[in-house]
Amino acid sequence: MKYNEFPEIEIPEWLTGPKWEDASWHNDACALSTYRGTDADGNTKLVRVWVDYERPELRESVPPFRFFVQTAGRLNPFDDDWKTIYAGDDEAQARAAAQRALAEGKS
Image (cartoon, rainbow, N blue to C red; front, side):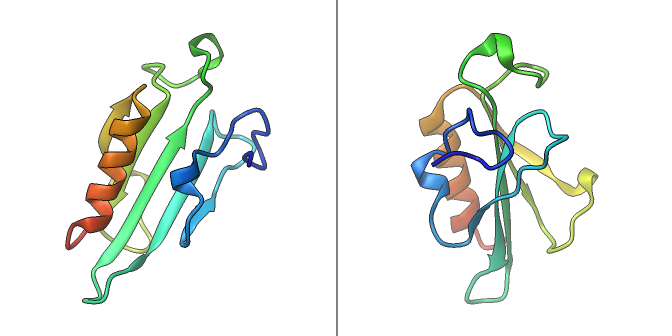
């Protein structure tokens, strides 16, 4: 499965489950998957994962990492509300960071 606005970027399997959505926008530098919701206790769960091109020479992000995992603590965050919890090329580490954020009481 590919991102709508970035058909050359494959959506990682772990970003295709329930509550994950392709939130990419045509003016973004790379693809974006978001998770929005609340847990059973009513805690906000917001995670977004930026997925850049596999080939570093195609990346526009600075630094040119493949994955950026971010969280925010409210349902309608501003850009400066997002906290980066992982930035790098290791998909397993990006997935683990996103899973930890979803498992915590409040993202």
